[in-house]
Amino acid sequence: MYGALGVTTYVFFDNIQVYRDSRFAYKAKYKASAQGGKDSTDYRKIKPEYLQYSLEGLRTNRNQFRQYIDYSVLFFVFFWGLNVVDAAVDGHLKAFDVSPDLSLRFKGGYSEMAGTKGLSIILAFK
Image 1 (spheres, rainbow, N blue to C red):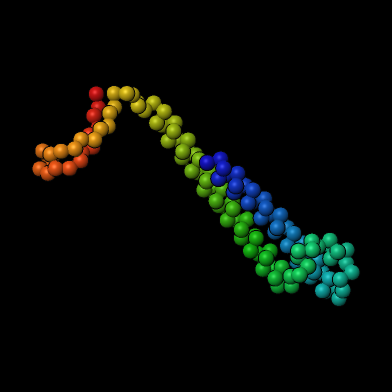
Image 2 (tube, rainbow, N blue to C red; image 1 turned 45 degrees about the horizontal axis):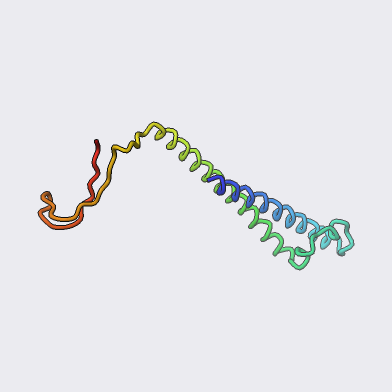
């Protein structure tokens, strides 16, 4: 269960980083296009993988990763809730008696209750 929480936390922070990078690239390209050139300081700070995208592509990428951030938070909350339920069930069943007096066995042959031959599973409490 902790693995699921760890993975969703990693995905959340990774999505935040990509969102911030694409948001910065969008703002820098937008400012550069408004000024009519690529000589602005912000434009030179854009990561190389974002230079190939158009303004529309960067805006779409930014919005998509904003949505991914929301999804990763929802998944984290969901898995955290499952962790709480698992802990509550474990705590509730802590005193459950699992003694050697319980036995489960298989018995083949005629079943008087069903009136047929077959395989029966017998759970005996002692």
